[in-house]
Length: 159
Image (cartoon, rainbow, N blue to C red):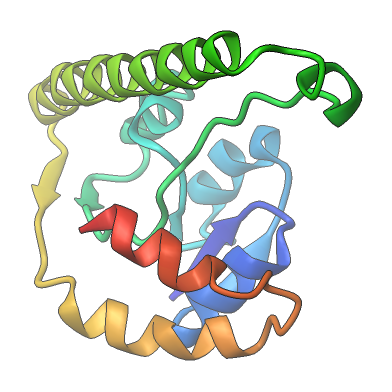
């Protein structure tokens, strides 16, 4: 299958590892590409699939969940090093709480959008994701620039 992906090397390699042909293209080109049969499917979060009305052309949605989106708060070391420990701890606690709340809202909204897409005739499929995970594992070795221990830290957070 030809699957539209963002022009992001890690996502391209992951889709390729799972057995599809990654087809990088801008999001604005996806709807006509589906209509014309240039691609067989599209990789995106539920909110994007729904917001772009891709359910009008794609009637099957496989919830492979191969990618976890994260949000980061970035700040300069020069500033953060001036903060007292209690203020720094408050920033960390608040950021974590905001992230968890954001995840909760996203999951709730995804469920609403999935129901709406089902009403539009989309069949939502929940495949066994173990084979996808197994195939995608080799992708991590293709990116040796991981910070030491980062991969293991992320995997532990996902459990």
